[in-house]
Amino acid sequence: MQVQHYMKLSVVVALVTIALKTAAWHWTGSVSLLSDAMESLVNLAGALFGLGMVSIAHRPPDEDHPFGHHKAEYFSSAFEGALILVAAVGIAWTAIERFHRPQPLQQLDLGMALSVGSTVLNGLLARAMLKASREHRSIALEADARHLFTDVWTSVGVVIGLLGVRFTGWTWLDPLLALLVAINILREGGHLMWRSTGGLMDQALATEDQEAINQVLTRFTSPDLRFDHVATRMAGQRRYVDLHLHVPASWSLGRAAQLRGEVEQALMFALPGLRASIQLLPVNVETRFEELEGTPSEAAPAPP
Image (cartoon, rainbow, N blue to C red; front, side, top):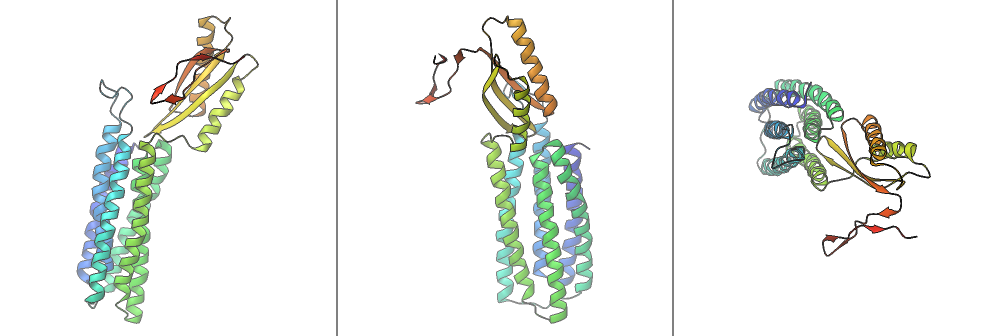
């Protein structure tokens, strides 16, 4: 299943869970169930925005975006993180009000049953989406999956707390649970926004990906061949590596180009979807990237 299909499914499930949780709040009057329903509204908004960003990310390169639109997914992750933070503030405000104006809860059995039903739906979808996010390397899909998992644990905590209210009669447990929900989703929202910031800053590939690249380059390295200036970055689902390949100056351009092609193929085989950019240089030439007042220095021969 493609990323867009998962995002569409997330929208449908969000609508269903909103209906279930709103009904649960309506029948019980529980502020913790209300906070749970508010988080599902955030799920819906995040899924809709994520669907739009994922669609943009899959557009082919054009004149204004020659490297593609893959970073659009990071906007989805940041947006969903911001929505989570706003929802947390609203939940906390409602909980504090309920501390000052406590209300009796009614029909808890029905409310908890509806909450459990929505939790099962969210849990199944979140598990499938998180697995798919690793396969497709989609941060938008991962953000939505992790948000759903947050919703799942929120609902589990709310149900456990409402059971406590039912058996003890302590109505103050209800707003206390809502505050704990707010703290939990604040943490998750901060994590999502941090992840999206890292992507927009051209973060390096994961350690295991860099190790896979190094293993490929090691296979080709010899006394006459060497690699340097290896730099990696991520852009949404795309992974990139730039490097220099130094070959003997006596080699023909055709021979050097053939070797470069073999290295590119080996890198893409080790990391499917990787985009490799390899610059050919003679063994006695170094290209420096040190910047002075924002201007890269020119190529200089290697020291003797």
